[in-house]
Amino acid sequence: MKKITLLFFMLSSIIACSQIKTTSELTFVSGLSAELQLNNETATAILTLKGPSNRWIAFKLGSFTTAMSASPDGVYYNGTTVVDGNGGQLTTDATQNWTLVSNEVNGSTRTIVARRPFSTGDTNDFTINFTDNDIDIAAAYGPTDDSFDLEYHGQNKAKFLNTPLSTLGVEDFSLRATQIYPNPSNGEFLIKAKTTLSQVNIYSQTGAFVKTVIVEESSDATEINVKGLQTGVYLLELVNATEKSWKKIIVY
Image 1: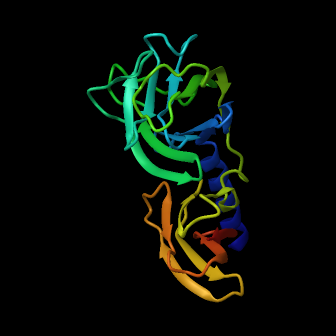
Image 2: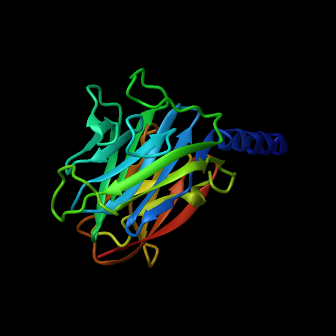
């Protein structure tokens, strides 16, 4: 029975992995990177966008030759939230289909995680087809410090045409592939898992138990708050029904 259960789990993991595609994290210009992940099971695109913390940052996707053409679909951060836009200058859509999942600043870098459905029913939005093997993407950020007004980006931009969409392997889809940021942290940080995460047990470096955080099933990312703890290194035990993994966080 144990062998059958293990085989079932392995097959389930492989099937689950085949439902996830990614561009991997790509650097467009210095200080600007992005990863687009496609989850076929939920028909959802998840964008992780990193750029300067004190100006607008934007991402475009679709099928295009130039990111400034009228067709590209995109999203940008306006200093408060993500805005769904389209066209060369990202005109704001009447219907907002991108949802902000998290917004974290570490030093001078802002990390935005946002999501939207493959198909929104909005004619201004690019319809994502999971069976496609590549996608055109572009990213840019503003030229002026402390300004989130959309203006010409100058050289702060780049595009990748026919970007390969690779299927994640079993290792990529395990708890070992979980990302934690910012790290070091002031006591507030985000855990982004690529598989189910049930709970997080937090321990001091000496092994003393600190707290347990129960994770909601629908969460794409889990916010952890351990403010008030002494500065130092803490161990995170990530747990789901089939595996455990350990990560380290530095609290300052």
